Length: 387
Image (cartoon, rainbow, N blue to C red; front, side, top):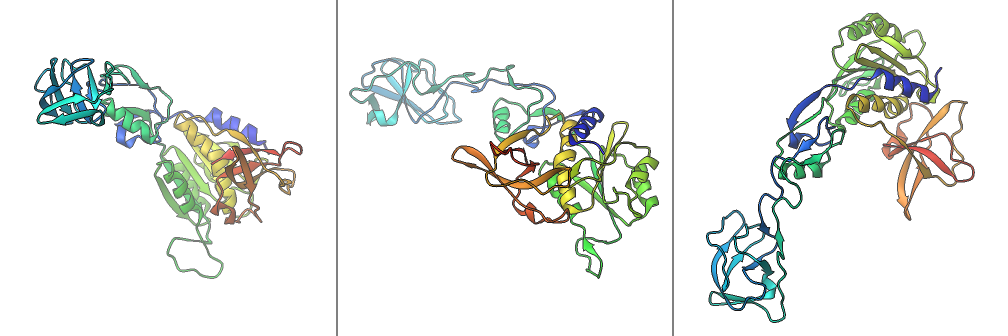
């Protein structure tokens, strides 16, 4: 049995980042860039008004004749000269000869003439957004290895970027094993239970934008070995059969399929019977069939492998304040406890969600973190993996 830290080291050593692909920027939310992204155009692309108002050609204009009105999307027809002004709306291009834009609230208009109100002093360039004042064409907007949030899609689009190069999404197969499992919608009978691990894993991966192919097999060694042998994706997840019971075939199936086993048991509660293997660039996990163990092993180990595949930094621990909780009643193994973390008076506090056994899914109704072991007896800080 190996320690948790050692398993992480073995995962890091075995996982090679996937290749890159070019995709439309509007599909890139959450994806990891593999190359810097330069702006294709200046942003803003032209001088334009930041306000509804009037453009003037002088610092102290008097009563000026309005020569045109310019709305967003239109081009100015006239250059502005002393004694002239133009009505301008937010986002409209600035005509040549403009000294400043005055807000409409600061102006008086009548019969085609306009002037700033008494006491209003114009500042050169007031209320004008200048071309390229944020980004110039060719300038890097985002660096390689950055993850693209939704807001970045807007920024990249504004800079004329249509496509980005990102790490390829991994291709996953999840195989639920067990003669006792029922498919969704299948009529329940004595001794049968719903397959909750398959839908749970599909939901977890959907949150990352990764599609999941799911299979379900009986406790048949040959069928599982065939699935491992013919697997052609990036990451194979086998639910159940990772222990040492009479019907546990995951280890032998992976070995028969040409996978090298890197670990069979880990000092983790829940999650002790966790297998990790590789075949060339392909990876495989044999996950415990008990649902809480399945979920913990995904969060603590599978997620790390996915991050490495997608060239992302792996999850890190933070410390949260967990007052009044003595820690889990363990059996000598390092123990994970689902928890709720929230900010209380500027400090991250966690509330442990007790679990009865490795099949107890009730803590997952609200968990957004995992606590590892017990809080420090003095500081009451506990290692916390945010989910």
